[in-house]
Amino acid sequence: MSSFRRACALDDVPVGGVLAVDVEGFDIAIVRTDDEVFAIQDECSHAAIALSEGDVDTAGCEIECWLHGSRFDLRSGKPTGLPAYEPVPVYPCKIEADSVVVDIDNPLNTDTEN
Image 1 (cartoon, one colour):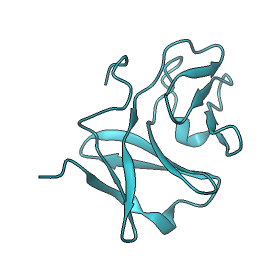
Image 2 (tube, rainbow, N blue to C red):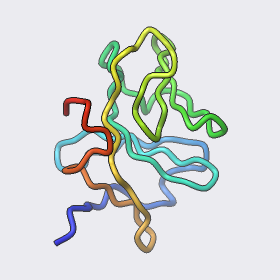
Image 3 (cartoon, rainbow, N blue to C red):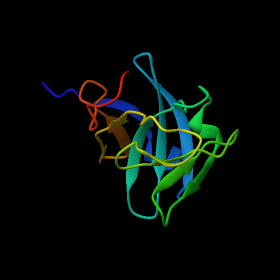
Image 4 (cartoon, rainbow, N blue to C red):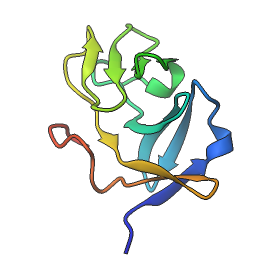
């Protein structure tokens, strides 16, 4: 049985944008770059602020927290800019038909807490 769950419709996430979703109680930010989709925990590890309210850097594959400017790599969840120094969970995601599906049970970076 697949552990992937539907997060949203692909069309709900604009290219270069982000969408906040709830996947079975997990707050996830679905981020769409020019040719990829990412799923990252929707909470900055520095100040518990929704990352989905920040800016997306499609060229650098990063998301920036709007409050203090912490930046996170969408592929690894690792901070790329202070003041955050702890990573945030990132989750496997893929496109199935017209939907974005996410595997919340198996984060890609196991060095974080959910």
